[in-house]
Image (cartoon, rainbow, N blue to C red; front, side, top):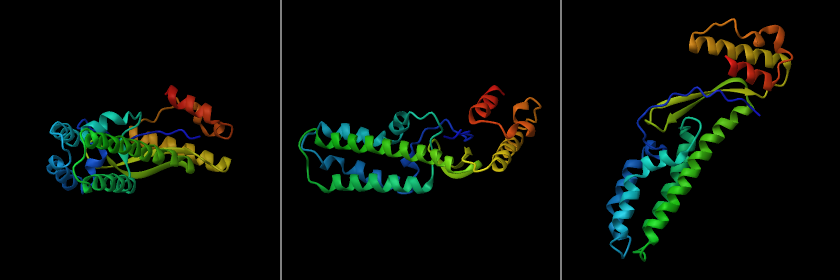
Length: 207
């Protein structure tokens, strides 16, 4: 188990993670312009068009993450490949019976949301494999800018590594917040050898 100190930056403008992929605009422009050829029922066309137009905004609303929506480029590429493949397969068919096409779009959308959620969370869980401060590069799903996530992992193999990890954490906090506080007495060198995960978490949350 690892304590994750999520220190990412967020922005107010919601975009949607897949929107940050370099082929998104071209792909979804094609999907929107060809939606009128996919259903025998005229009522499916505006419904499907709205799903495609609001794809990015709806994605951000449905993520429901307690951590910033920041995804690595590698995982974004994996998600995009799966979504585009399913969308292309859907568009290869001829006209569908009423209701089928928008339902399939919703299914692809829901799968995309789950893929993005899993991708973001998996990257955070990978922090467990490190000891101390660890940083990885990401893309902010809010505004598609380059960002990074800083985590603190507790996977230390010795007391020496553990002490060095906690000291590195304190140094990072001091540098990032410009806070050099004597109140972290529970993390002073004489206490590090016997410091547990629970005690460290309590110490950090109290300050």
